Image (cartoon, rainbow, N blue to C red; front, side, top):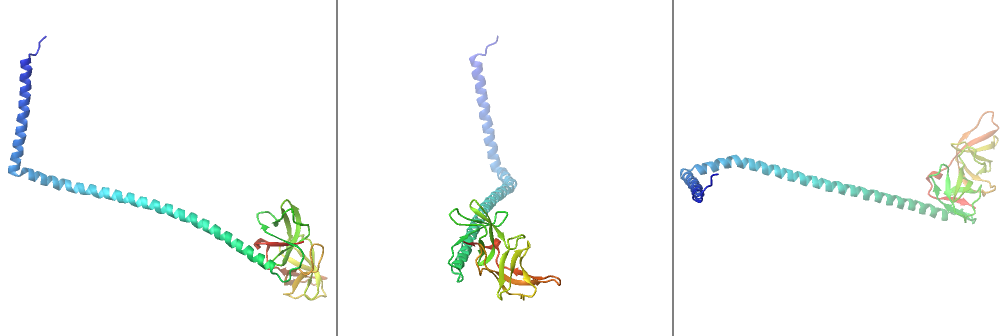
Length: 267
C-alpha cells in the first residue's frame, strides 16, 4: 500500500493555488485588453440592442396583465353593485306596492264611511281572499255573519254569503250560474228577479207588458238578508223573444269582487 508523504501533498496544493492565481491574472489581463481595444463597449452595446427590446416587451406584457386584472376586478365590483341595486330596487318596489295597496284600502274605507246613503244597520268591512278557488272573505268568530247576508263593493250588491268556515266566508256572486235569486226593481217600479248565467248578471221574469230601457238603475226590493234599496247595476242590453212572455235585460256592474280592496257585509 502506497502512502502519500506530507511533502508531496503540500507540493500539489501549492501548484493548485499557483494555477488559480495564474487564471485570475489571465482574466484580469483579458479584461484590460478588452477595455483598451473597446471590445467590452461593443459587447455591451450589442447586449443592450438584444436585451432592451426583450425587456420592453416583458414590461408591456406585465403591464397589460396588470391592467386586465384591474379591469376584471372593477367589473366584478360593478357586477356586485348592480346586483345590490337590483335587490334594493325589488325591495323598494315591494314596499311601494304595499303602500299603494294600503292607499287603495284607505280610499275605499273612506268612501264606505262617508257614503251618504248608508243605513244605521251594523256592517262588517273585510278584505277579499283571492288565493281561494272561490270568492272568499276573512271573518272573525265575534262577527255575527250568517248565510244569505248581502255582500257589497263600493255600495254595489255583488253577492250573498254562501258558506261560513273557520275564519272565512265564501260568497256566491250574482253573475255565477245557479246563484240565489234577488228580488229587484227599476227606477220606474218594474219588478223582476236578478240571477246569474255563469257570465253575466241578468234581470228577468219581467212581464212583456212592462217597459225596460237601457241605462235604468236596478235596486233591491228587500228580502231576508238583503235590505231594500241596495244598488245592483244598470241595464246594458235587452233580450226579448217573439214568443216569450217575459223580458230579460243584461245588467252592467261597474265593480268587481276580484278588483276590490275591501268588501262590506250588511248584517
